[in-house]
Image 1 (cartoon, helix red, strand yellow):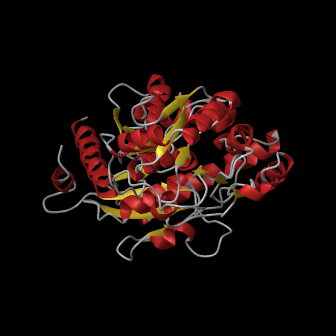
Image 2 (cartoon, rainbow, N blue to C red):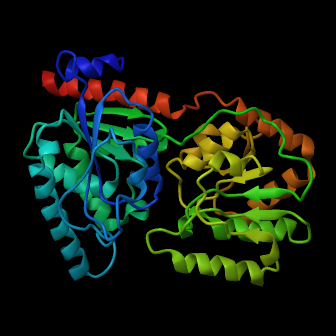
Length: 398
């Protein structure tokens, strides 16, 4: 269904009114993906409805243009639904209940043609709010529906409350969608759309000549993203070389201690003077242009890191773990190298091969730049518009 279908579903000559729910303004992947998509002039009329946070201002959502209203309602939603003591979890669940009521009563929700929950936490209170409403409810899945990914309490909420209520599910990969499908009600609509990653397809131009080989991982500093695995593999494969490792990303969601651990570990491994931690990077395209090798090495199945799409579009020599969403995009020896997950030796071997073989790096970089199916933010928005219209039409016919 075309994006124009959204206008028809919202009434003659009127764009669909879509409320996007989020529980945080932190600089997370889900938040950046939503910001990028809403900046791409979508065919619907968006409103972002946030839970209050401790941060001053709108955080990452301050980047939205003035034409996208940002509203705040309810109570804070700090971490804790899937961890902590029973008392801590009970308090978190109480906050979800309060947030669901505040969301349901908000004018943006009451006048919406469709509600889209951008995160798992937002999906929990959004599903509660939607239970007493006929507004179509869409869940955006960026994590596997698995206790290891979202915690036991989060898994229970997702499988018993959220997914059974969903009229539609947008997943960032087929692997992500497959973990959720058993819990969907009959008739729920589903689609796989990669997250808006701010990509611009480039040719596989070599980085500027001169200087040592540069390897990088673009990801928030978080234990499951695999920075420690990459650091150990780098030290093993290239510890005696002049190669440099770059680990950009900030440490949201309480992972500052992990960042300090990585810096200390780099020193212990004897590569501290060749590992850079530049923090959050706004100019992703510019940063990737200086890399020779780009790595994804998550230590649990990756739904689909936006970094993999960014690496491919930038025309870098890519290395990914052979599971989850990245394995749907990278074919070993064609547009990257696929290695065994959680295997330091396998990753070190791949880094060593690429470091020693300029021709292989060039071949894989060219293959990466030619990867079919990469979508810019406007194309991602168009795909969402078509799906929103489909969900609204299906709910109207029910």
